[in-house]
Figure (cartoon, rainbow, N blue to C red):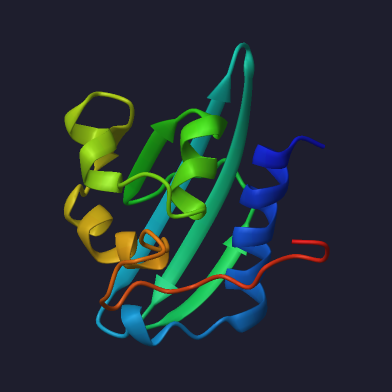
Length: 127
């Protein structure tokens, strides 16, 4: 497994394990992340209900579909890139309720020297 896939997997496993996300207490909706690389697409589906988060690998309809590369998503979950900047430069496409991205972007860690409500993910073994 690549470092990118590992970082992505760890991010979603951490969300599923913690289940409750106080930063999302006012958010309800479904968000599907489609990570495209060549002819392969990985799907991650988040179901958010007032801070309760469920994660699955289902390719189902969602209120918001976020399409990007696994490499960019890895950078987002490591706090090395910014969601809004990625959208503005065309590296990430949104279909559906785009306002949800403003709500869930707080799940991504900010740069190491940033301050604010961004969530930090646990480092995996050997990190």
